[in-house]
Length: 306
Image (tube, rainbow, N blue to C red; front, side):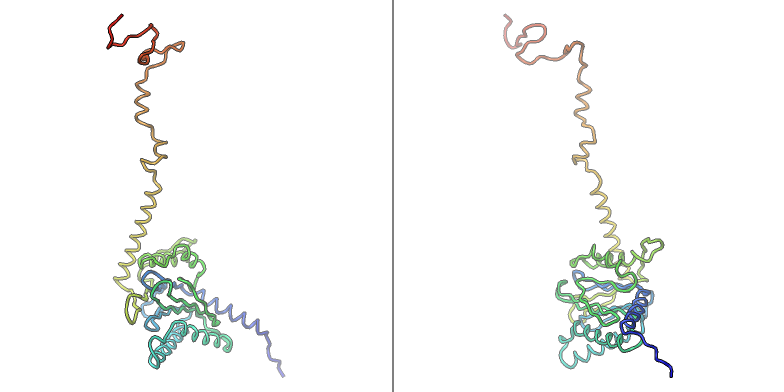
């Protein structure tokens, strides 16, 4: 009778984790971050039909990286759950936290019970009344759920991208600046020899949860609107660089400029000063008023001579 192959459970879990992480790292990255008027989704996606960013409910968005068929099944299940709960109770009862918990249970069961885990990493984002109230939840292949404050990056070289985001991100930044930062972070990795890449509009999938809208807040930014927004963000970046260059240039009125440039008045006085004679004699020097010069006493022109 053949012996059944045995492996310790911890080794099986490690192998599944490594398998899932490798699959996720091969995908293109996606970024989710808060800005002054909502939540911005930016994903590197060359397809116009297969979306990595979608809507789950009124104020809730979904972003994912990894295998498309696997996270698309999760997205559809989340939409069905949200619609059922909103129809059965109230639309306000559908929250991002509840959907994140449901996704965590599903992914955890798949990771432990099935031989192959899902090669996906997803984000459930809910927009609030202010950037401080935005909720971003990261869900990994093993069912782990984390609350990300303000920003997150998934897929590819996520750690390097997240470092760029943390250095420059502000919750109160406008949409154009937030998009410029996200595109810059995505292009900072993957270039030849470590050089940054330039991403065009046809390489990006961009959407927002607009906190100023009533009802369904999700909207995509595509076509001419995306090209215009990218041009605006690039123009602001160029203007900022120009201001920084002007600030570094020495000012004509600054102390450094005065120290390097010769004083015109001092130069004129030096040119007009007479030369000094021998033996300490002062030729051409006018004696002080009321004093005595070399030739004896001087008289005041306004007084009669003695």
